[in-house]
Length: 492
Image (tube, rainbow, N blue to C red; front, side, top):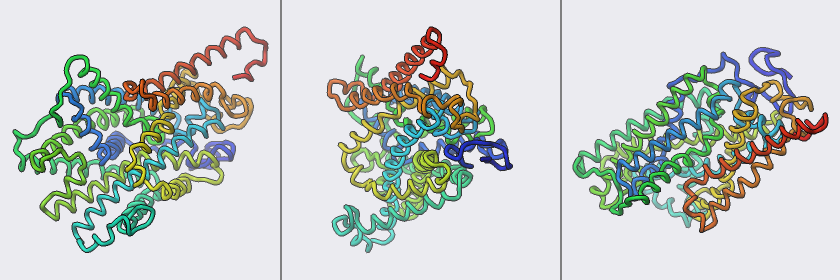
């Protein structure tokens, strides 16, 4: 079966390839430095990103200590994101196809579906956050709607107005997504800078009202000193890495569209270290000013907007944060499951159809219950989220240290037993053998009280354990290939 813009451009099994999963040809690689930069702006400039950044300044550290930890963390993310994005940029393949290198042409469905589950759940959560901004705007403009905003009068724990706002944002995102990756690129090119403009305007408004002398670099009176302070700085760095854990895994879904690796790296420099640190500074300025203006630190930008005394400002702020949330949802939580679900049955599920399936499943996640239950969030992150680090560790270790970057692209789409990624029955048992105990370790760190100090570095612990175990299993295989009889290759 041939796929691509020209007949016969690429051949592969119908069980493994369609036009969306096939390598992106050069003429369809339209993403440059600015597009990658804007993509990261859309990912960072969200309500969740704002709250996360603000919370780090309430950790008991001084401002420069928090900024040092954040800088260290985002530099690590920058290095890791280039590491995982490079092979997809070179080969032109998305994350689930890249996972075939380590897990096998059929075994890759395991890491793909895990990533899809994570994305679908967070897609619902982010859509809920966006709907809250829309609900705030509607209530400000039409106070009579308050009668429809009582949760008890609605359905499944959400008011009728809440449902209307949720379905409205759900539909808007679906419309942007359904037009394809070029539409997503154009949307993020606009959304990222738009949020920056509103954030700067919020900062100017706060400073003008509170006074520059009232702006501090810490959001708590509690102070950490000595060893405890430096441990917390390390935790801040680790938490920053953990915040990007999901996109760290499937960044290849975007890097495959980059014209050159150099443009990808430049976009990542601007979008991660530069953009993240500037966003953090603006966030703490606004949050610190709310202490003076409202008597407490308000870490939710939507709530800050709701307290503005100008209807036009509320309109602009609410619309902007809705756009911001749509941006991060498209980047982090919509594109990924679309490719991941398409990977399960390429003959029947295209990129668009996979996105429709993901959007449909989102309607059953009732995210308002999820975000209101800290226990549910902890269980989800500690179990399903615990797969993210180990998957990254195995895929990166396999590509760079086992395969040494030598990948036969045609074999990524081949069911031939002689193919490089057939392994045994299409599965690499050693990758699964490294994954299972590493995920169990991640869950143990997440839930065991004695290991609570390690929770911030859980991603590093589980990713390192998975990579190390996988390499040990590969060395054992290499030894058996040397001393074993001919034909032992079948055990790989």
